[in-house]
Each structure stands twice: as C-alpha cells, then as structure tokens.
Length: 319
Image (cartoon, rainbow, N blue to C red):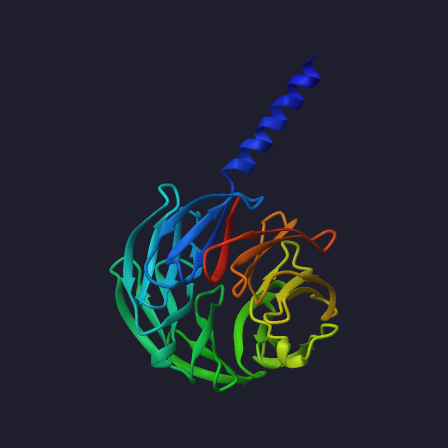
C-alpha cells in the first residue's frame, strides 16, 4: 500500500511538472507568442508588438524579451501573467539579439541600418552602435561579456567586435549568407550556419579562424534547397541539431567528429530549433507550413506536428 501511495505521488508530481512546463512560439504574421505544453497542446496566446521574431528569457525565465521587426521594438513579456508589460525602442528592422552576462544590456542587429546596437534595459535608452556589413543578423555575446560576434548576410563574414572599444577587431570569412550562432566544445568553437552554402562554418574562438566546414546533403534535394539557419546544442554538448530550411529536414551532427548523422523530415522551411532541457524532445518551427514539429531525439523520429500561427519563427521552452 505504501509503495502504491509513493507511486501515485510520483505520478502526480510528474503530471504537475509537465503541466507547468511551457513552450513559447513567436508568430511573425499574427503578432503573438503562442503558448503550448511540452506535448504540443495549445494553451494560450500572448499579444505582442508587430512581427515578433527572436526571443530570449532573462536569467530566471520570468521574462521573455522578443524582437519585433515591424514595430522596431523589443517587447518585454511577463511569463507569469502571460502579458507584454513594456517595450524598448529599437532601430529599423531589428532581427536577432543577445543579452550581456549580467542581463543589463541588449545587443541587437539592426538590419536596415547595418549596425549592431546596444541598449540599456533599465533606462530603455540606446548606448552605442557598431557599423557592420550589409544585413546583420546573428548576434552572440561571449560569456565574459567582452566581445560580440555578428553575422553579415551580404558580406559573408562574421564580425568580431570588442565591446569595450566598440570596434570590429576582426572580420572572419565564412560561407554564403551566414545567419546564426551556437557555441560548442565548452566555448572553444563557434558554429555558424551558412544559408546559401548548405553548410556550417566552425570557428575557433581561440584565434578567430575557421577550423572546419560541415556540408549537408539530403537525398533527392538540390544543394540550393538546403538552407541551414537555426541550430541548438544538446545538453551534454555532444550533438548539434541543425535546421535545413527549405529542405524540410533537421539533421544531427556529432560535435567531436563534425559528421552529420540522422535526418528527420519535419515541416516546410525548418528554421527555429530548441531542445527541451532534458534533451529528449526537439521543437522545430516550420515557417512555411505554419506549424511546429516535435521530434524524439532518441529515435530521431517526428512525434507530432501541431498548428501554430502564421510564420512561426523562434521557440523557447520553460521547464
């Protein structure tokens, strides 16, 4: 009887944890963040500024920051109430951003102005800008807060920016139309997706040089249709999942060997990728089929695909 009681309590605890966990998906055309449980059941929607795209949590996951490309704002969303509580004015057509390690500064790629811009989150005022190549997108601040990487889609480079001097100190030549970043190998590697090269460039963060290029192929697909953008690293750091865009697949890559492995068919234009913190489920936003695919990482199989608002962009998971 005692064992049954313990089993029942454990089951209730697991159910309560699953119920409280949330998945957030930004919808560019609906001006909303849609909220799901971790199994893909829709639960609510949050109204945002116009054309919400990239999202990040603050340190304790109580706040979501969302970049709104058509209203030129950073939306501030309170997770508990499910409401947008404020905005930070940004430049024209902001895309991707990253936060300083202390959470006080946001660094944003401003596409139409060809700059990376820094803003103070407390005062909501601009701090400075750094000129970049055409169409900056990806932004990643180093863990020590001293440098930032920014992609230029037109120049085909990654800008390495000294945030103290506010200057580009190196331009790292990568593939065509670089888009997003993920740090791997304990921060020793910077992985960069090259949308028009069907590849990922791996940059050494020790000397800021390209140390490897990973090429992708999908059976029956032309190379021009393999357009990698989003990536996410497994919790153990051993596997990188890469979205192949128009190829409608995601693929896993072994971080140590740099070799692509299993592929999973998902929706149309597989773009944004996020893993559950336990590493068991991969969530994929499919921008042209207006849905999200849940992938079981152990079997590398799609579990289900659920409808999301028009043009889903980014995904966050709050366990």
